Image: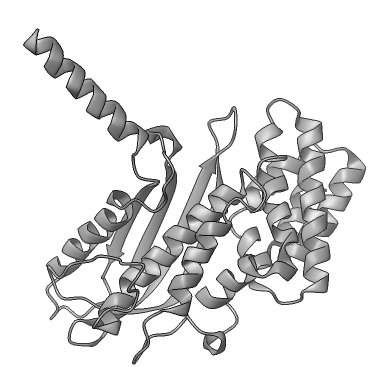
Length: 307
C-alpha cells in the first residue's frame, strides 16, 4: 500500500511539473574568442550557465505550458571587447521559432542581431531579473538581465500573436516596462528613442503602437492562416500568405522606415521561396513583386528562384 501511495504522489508531481513547466526552451552560447587572453575565460562559461538558467528556469507567464509547447529559441552573446575590468561590449544574436501545424518544420519568429549590448559581470555574481526593479543598484550589471528578459518577453509575445490576433499584447507590455525602466549609465545604449532607428525601443514601440495594429493581423495571417494550413489546404494557405504580404506592403508604404517590417522579414527567404515555388503564374508574379519590395536585399533571389 505504501509503495502504491509513493508511486501515486510521484506521478502527481511529475504531471504537475509537466503542466506548469517554463515557456522557453532556450540555448544560450557565450563566445569570447575576441577577448584579451589576459582575461580568465572560465568566467564566460559560468555566465553561459547562468543565462541558460535564467531563461529556462524562470516562469515568464502565468499560463500552463506542456513540454512540447515550449518556444524554441537561441541566443549567441558574442563578446567583442573588455571596456574595463569586468565590463564588456557584445553583440547578441537572437533566433526563435515555432512549429508549423501538421509538419515537422519550424518557422522563424525572430532572426535578429542586437549590435549594442554592454554589461558588467564578475564570476559567480547572481544573474537574476526582477520586473519590479529592472535597474538594480549597478546599472551595468543589471543591463544584461534586462536585455535577455526583454527579448524573452518579445519572443513570447510574437509566439502568442502568431496563434491569436493581438495575443501577445500583455507580453509586449512587459517588455515595454523594461524599456521604460531600463538601466542608464556609461556605455549603455539601445533603450531610448535617440539610440538609433533599429533598437529595442523602436521594436517594442512598433508592436504596441495602436497606429500599427495591422501588423498583428499580418503576423496572425502569415502563421496561423497561412503556414499552419499548408498541409491541409495549400492553395488557400498560399492565398493567405500572399494577403499578409499585401497588407505588409501597404503598411510599409504608409509607415516608411519602421523597424518591424525588416524585423518580420528576416530569416524567411527560403521559406517564402518554398511557399510560392508551386504557385500559379499570376500569384508567383505578385509574390515576386511584393517580396522584392519588402526584402530588397534578397530581391534578386526571389526573381531568380520564382521566375
